[in-house]
Length: 295
Image: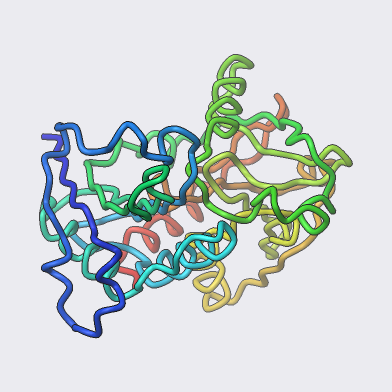
């Protein structure tokens, strides 16, 4: 049975040195109205978020997600989130979910209400979709032009290309376009021919015994799942690397995956109609690791 849970955080209390922030949380009905019509998260997408996978009531990689939330806040000139306050909010959300199975916790920090109190913050949790078919059978992807050259993020930091913002209209449009082309997902590429990331996932390519992901200097959101998986692969004796990857190199990959906090590792079986080998054994091993408790 699907479940949902939500709580609002009072960020104004985040400077309080207390160790217990329970009094700064207000549990709300996730099906009831909760935001003001002046809320800038809905009017402008002016805010940031994180999605945390939950497995058997254990929230995965909470520390890295909170670090990335703080990084996005700094890029967007939002008040720095109090890490311990948010950590406790995640614990409350995880404790109010099912004891078994997969779920997703979302953290949202908005600039707040225009000409009013700011910021606003809340945490939601819900049952996760069943991603087993994607993990086991793989996905087909197409490459889509992101509309900027590789050096644009460094030249125009105000584009916030390295922040996980609520402005996901382009990301969702890309997935819809991929489906119109008969695929399941997309890989963004730069206008000058380099590989970036997927709309909601990181890309990992295998060349022999080397695992490679695009360097995060191109405005790529540094994936928490990708980082964790690279650590696991290194412990297992594999070489990992961050590289500037030309689009032409996609066809040379011995295997490829899109990895994210909730879908986990989805093997890519075709890119732009060209088949990519599916390493079923390695994919199963990777997903077993990603489903294990990770802090």
